[in-house]
Image (tube, rainbow, N blue to C red; front, top):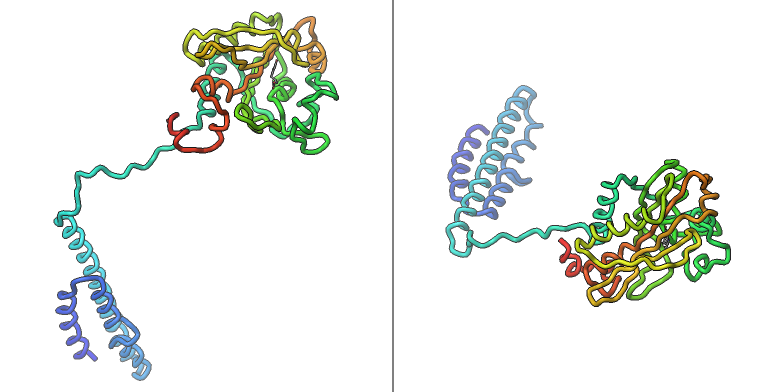
Amino acid sequence: MFNSLNKISVTIKSEIKNIKDLTELNNFKSKYLGKKSIITLYFSKLALVNIPERIQCSSILNTFKRKIKHKIIQKKSSLRNRFLSDQAQSSYLDYSLPGRRIERGSLHPITMIINEIKEIFYQWGFVIYSGPELENIYYNFDSLNIPINHPSRSMGDTFWFDSNHVLRTQTSSAQMRILKKYSYPIKAIVPGKVFRRDFDHTHTPMFHQIEGLIVDKSISFSNLKWILKNLVIKIFKKNIKIRFRSSYFPFTCPSAEVDIQNKFGDWIEILGCGMVHPNVLKNFNIDRNIYSACAFGMGVERIAMLKYSLSDIRYFFENDIRFLKQFV
Ligand code: DAH
């Protein structure tokens, strides 16, 4: 066996030198380490010799095997290096070509506007709250003075979950929750998703609102006006025209809607607001001889559409990269 192994190791040396590619290397591997190789044959014969000889031979065989394996690994890496340097020398590799760029993702435009508005209110000392999207009808309707026969409660307008729960139709549903959590005086905003059974170029079944609530001593409509006017100026970053138009909401009195003027001179509604209605204050257990409150609720997509001059709200939810890319 010794003689034969010595002979083999001489042939191995010259054979491995002449190997030119991976296929040849694989053939070499199976020739010397495979099932039919001479080493495997010797291993299978070990059982026939006595124990001391078996120990000695198996150790020699194992060392031999390890050496071959090591040679194969070395050869593999030298073949690879040669392949790479050959490639580098051949003319088709142009190192001056620009690399392929990995496209960068970015925040959704609606998320960006929400973050921007959150930042403004944060600087004004508002708490940022978020209520549940699956809401108890008490918070969504009853606590807000919305009568039992109000159209917004109908199956046609609202996604009912069961007889007591809806997908919230407005972030105003968080007003009572804010007061339960923080008590008052308080100023808070609630950005979040709301749901209505509507679908056309200006309505989607899910959209975003930001609710605002301020409860304090001697809060008046002028506080509300200052906040909303300055908010609009900060969002649109120019002296945009804004008007307060008298309106009606069950949970505010007096109520107003705020319109801003687009570049064609049309007035577009962006939010509803008002002084919190006495019935709602009563539901909130607020002593209206001491405290007063104002509230507002704005549609985020509406604001985004005006800010980016878009005519169809559905662009926001189609996930078309060509559209979303513009906001990176
Ligand atoms: N919740 C109203 C809506 O979804 C918007 C609104 C109007 C919110 C007046 C308010 C408010 O807080 O005072 O249309």
